[in-house]
Image 1: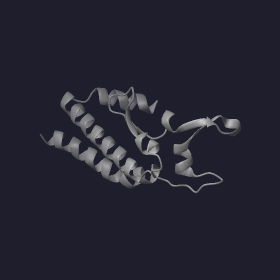
Image 2: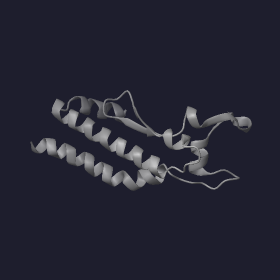
Image 3: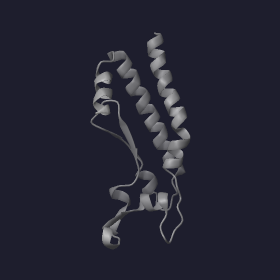
Image 4: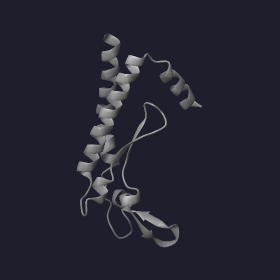
Length: 126
């Protein structure tokens, strides 16, 4: 499994490098989450407020998410509950898409990668 190889390589990194990498990833995740919040259309504020940075089981992996319990509403046809975040991002038959999540993430991807790489390089140059 590719993730197993990656996790093994990460576990062998020096502590100082892992700490710097974790800090850089956390800063970039927070920056991305704030940009997504700023891009989210606001009607009630629930969608904007649903944008979160969540830790995963892996040390150096964070997830930026939107939607969830606060934006999920009752029954919506045969498929059960409906998350307003998805309807906003992709649109429905009745409403146009108002993409806020993926366009923001794509626009910031190169800058995020560059900032993380710079943080690693700074440690390696010390």
